[in-house]
Length: 111
Length: 113
Image 1 (cartoon, each protein chain N blue to C red):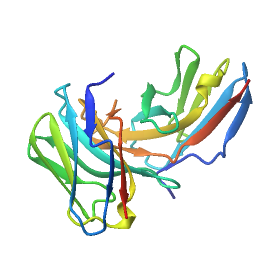
Image 2 (cartoon, one colour; image 1 turned 60 degrees about the vertical axis):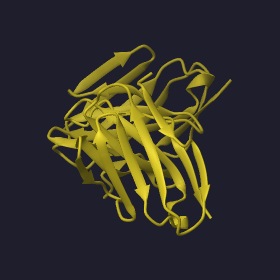
Image 3 (tube, rainbow over the protein chains, first blue to last red; image 1 turned 45 degrees about the vertical axis):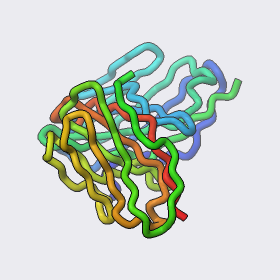
């Protein structure tokens, strides 16, 4: 089993809709969770971090964490064409300086 | 934006030649990382550093070495480049022991012919 899995294929959403991305992880000791956005040809950009169970909202982005089920999700509300990018899930644990990354999910927002 | 630069930004080299990539930061962060990103594999950690002269291997360290003689600089060396090392290389920095909040440099696109 991969350490961090993002299984969904490319996601196409109409402008103004909600985009929903999911990520599962295998290490139960994981304690820090991140979503990065990466535009084509650019470097990953940190958009959300979450450490506790529940929801965390930042603008149009909401991260949801469920440690018992070992998944973390990202919701993008009122999707805009500028949200078209690949979204990377990353997971870390205290005492370990490294992050494990999923392969990413491509989101395409259709005007 | 975090103050991270990478040089060169693009490089084409031939198999068997040595290559050194440089990551420079102005944030005085303790932790620095080198990743490679390839289609179908995502971001994979090559080496990382947790202080001057303190480095450790990541998941794909074979064929790579690193050095960190100053807080601000982290060098990645391919001693003898191979075509399988054609990739986009990203440097990242973090000030947290949790590996959290890593900020990435602009990347170096390396092609080994």
